[in-house]
Length: 126
Image (cartoon, rainbow, N blue to C red):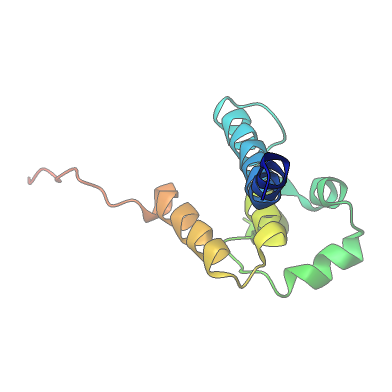
């Protein structure tokens, strides 16, 4: 095997890794924008979700039947309007909604919600 053949074999072997690294770089950029408060809002109403996800109201409603209520979407207070969690929906679209990786992301998100935080403050007695 000459030097050119070796170089070509190395390039072929590294190509999938480089593609994966580029996808990760895009995800890191998206996360950095969210942390900086830039980019699209995380929780949106149905019309905004349709626009962001590029689907009709009816298609969104059909998908919603298969998503986790309270994680991917939930109803807002008295108005009962559905709200959508765009980052988790996008993650589910990328990884598959039933994939172990996506379910871990959902679990981490749920643990970070204020309603799921354990209070470490002791109540003062009377």
